[in-house]
Amino acid sequence: MLNPEANHATSGRRTGTGTVSVETPPRGARASVRSRTARLLVLDALVAVLAAEIGVLAGRHPQPVSDLLLLVAVPGGVAGAWLLALGLTGGYDPLGLGGEDLTRRVGGAAVGLLALLGVSAIPGLGESLRSSLAIAVSLAALLTLAARRASGARLGDDGRCGGGALRVLVVGARPDVEAAVTAVRKGRTAGVEVVGACLPETGPWPDTCAGVPVIAHLHDAAAAAQAVGATLLVAAGLAGAPADLRRLAWQLEGTGCRFAVAIPATDVADHRLAVRSIGGAPVVTIREPVLSGAVRVLKDVVERTAALLLAVVLSPLLLACAVAVRLGGGGSVLFRQVRMGRGARPFTILKFRTMHDGADQADVLHLNEVGGPLFKIREDPRVTGVGRWLRRYSLDELPQLWNVVNGTMSLVGPRPPLPREVACYTPDARRRLLVKPGMTGLWQVSGRADLPWEETLRLDLYYVDNWSLILDAGIVARTFSAVALGRGAY
Image (cartoon, rainbow, N blue to C red; front, side, top):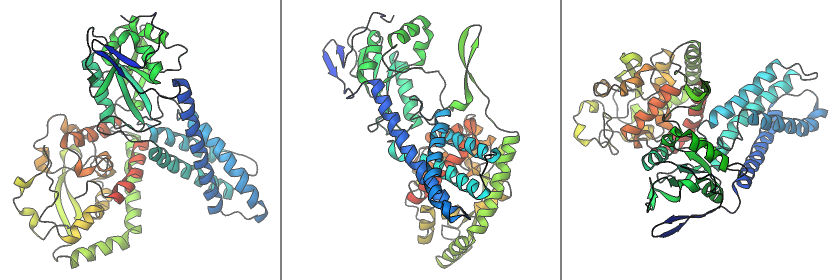
């Protein structure tokens, strides 16, 4: 039972053997949130001004006299509108500042402003200025995503990240705390740091739980959260004690600390969650994944059109790669292989050949360096010199644009599996076959071949269950940096 009288602050953990000190932020929770929000406001305003300046310069304005006014007034207006739009989509919610839904929030702000711009009837808003504003909003969205991801540290394997992170204190029984901390780490959320745990057990506590320090008893959770400037995250197991939760919320009143309750469901994007009341009891409903319907048809049309345009624009690069493959080892330029598509239907995938001609028939399964049904070799002896370079920058996959055009693949989707891989799938793994495989996906922007099979599968299933156009846009944007860095490509 939580102690409603607990109102003292603590910066350490009391145990039977002493006190373990915990790093306390220089300011309180409320001041820390204000400071972090202010930094984001300044960052977003600067990004919007830069985007607006580029938009004005890129637009064609027939009245040179008004250029100075455009360069001053338009950026100010765009910055104000952009900050307001981000605020309305939850871009400054303290619990969402480091959330995985960053792309959805920024994308929602951009879509809203573009839609408003398209239907607006503002006097004097000519087509040239309207086009400049559209360019400015689109650039603001892309630059905001890049700036926020660059300024926020990404969660590492130890679960800790740099300064300015959203600090979280997990409360609950030891198994529930371990599950909550593991879920945060698996999500690899930018800008979230688990600073400690509070356990209800009596007697001496362990120094750590799931790799984070145990800093207080459950009775002192509210005071501990205030002392370390953290959001209190109640693990799913403790959510079954409504009276305790109510008292804990009372203790947090006026402290500036936020209060969140975890649900026993992982890998569910927040756009599928909704809070409802059933018979007076608050519940969280989970919407079904979008696996068909008009939005899926729109995705198919947009991707096929984009793939066709990309094939035309990149035709010089495609030709250069074909010549390099031919000169680098002779044999056929294209490599054809049977993969499994949506519904486990086989199709022929196209790639630039990166191996010596006929080397794919060699028996090298004993050289496999990854677990599960995947097959990967870092230093594959079958790969040519040109092929190694093509693989590093994913240029060997460009012919798959034709697979997208003919409808057997998507631009974004799960990794296309081999038939022998599908033969080893568990029932859970077969769920990734509910959608078309993609040229890129969460697996590629998160590490590609460096990922173990379990993590690759988790990312693919997350994509299947939580797909949205905004998620696709974010993956495409992150693909460019993943390809440029060449991590996990071999």
